[in-house]
Image 1 (cartoon, rainbow, N blue to C red):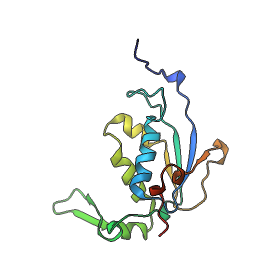
Image 2 (image 1 turned 180 degrees about the vertical axis):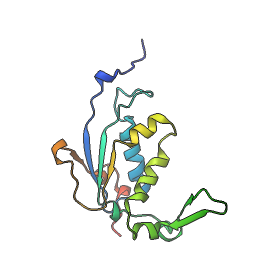
Image 3 (image 1 turned 90 degrees about the vertical axis):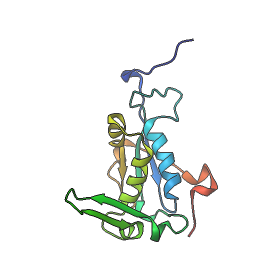
Length: 154
């Protein structure tokens, strides 16, 4: 038996649409990271970008479990001495760019490297219910149908 290795001409990329309303952030991120990498396909090849294009809508309506909504802190550094900054998940979700919570969770579930950065370009996240990708005819994926824990009602 020989190990199968996909070629660029053999890769079939789909467009999928995920409604993140009421979805648990970590479970959503794990599902999307697998789709972006292409690990759900039988033709998965580790060194090729064989994942799907993912559109996430209603990213501002995601749910964090436990006390993460008020206690989870996102840090970044400005590059200047003493320039460490922080914001809680609540401040980000109620702020101007609430989709950054979902984006950070997905990015942190991908392996670091040039291929992951390329695969992350196949991700589009929108805070509202509208998206400009109707021409690609994305197929809707119901995250709650995979596991009851994927959605929270409150």
